Image (cartoon, rainbow, N blue to C red; front, side, top):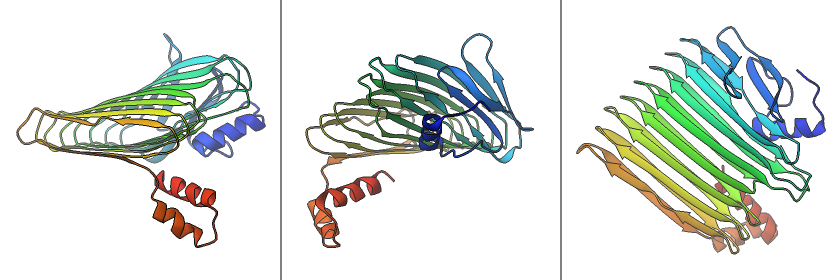
Length: 308
């Protein structure tokens, strides 16, 4: 592992909860270059030969192992693009921790575009956590555009948490998934925007097999003059079940657009969507203030609790 400075360590802690070199397999990328990499007996990481990125192969039957693949940018004006492919073997069970942190102290935009493609084998289980975070006192923008493509074979299970903590000026998030027979996909997105930040999230989940299931959950908070657009679409092509839930808190002069869509192409598809946008409940703030909090402290507690 190459030497890390204070900023590197702070970003890795924010996006991947890393305080030291992780156990198991990992690939840490900084400013378009590898900061460190290690494969394990069951998880192999190899560089692509035709474009920037890595291939990750998890052996069939792998249990209770983890993979860390965070990316950090600390150079103003950096535009990093990476293509990562995950091949998850049958009957395996793994945790994958990704995420990107940008520290921009300059006047130019720093941008990371990540294209992650998952091939999840029959009976495999995957938990994927992706956090995005930006900081730095420069005037340059911090831009993150993740693309996620998921293909799930029979009876597999995948949980994806996609979290935008703060400090990201612009993000376009595209997620496309195909869910096979008996498989289940849970997509949870949590994000907060402030200032004049812009966030757009598009999700398309196609339930292609009998008894395929998906649950899509979005929780967001828009502050100041920020703008958000969320468009989840679930397509049922077989006897299947889906539940889409979008909850947002709007504050100050922000704007939020939530456009859930469900489409049934089979008479036994059971698809439900819910969407709600509202402000913080004044009674909640008043109750917390009776415990000695200021209005600002009470608001912070409610916001943090909503995004959990």
